[in-house]
Image (cartoon, rainbow, N blue to C red; front, side, top):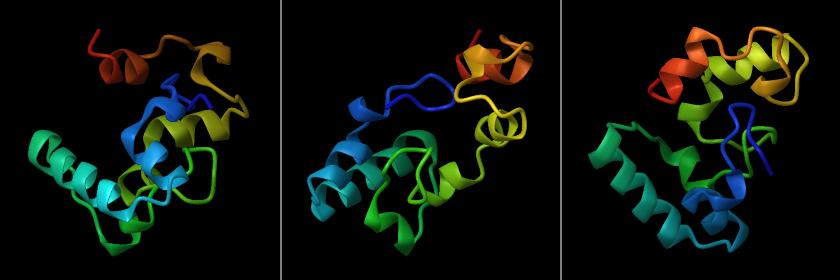
Length: 95
């Protein structure tokens, strides 16, 4: 499963923990991300994530401007967009 931005969801610790129904691992990863990147999570995030193209995503990811842009342009991932690599994607990948 590839996200709109190109990340491989199936390699994401939250996605893996969700598929394994491992609530302790989900909480552990959320806390790690909170300390590492300042991710703010809420109780609904303890359910995990099935990938950004699903109905169950982290609250942080539900506000993703990359996802919003891809959906508005009706592309399954940014690399299909005529504006690829836009400034939004360059910033996301630190280019």
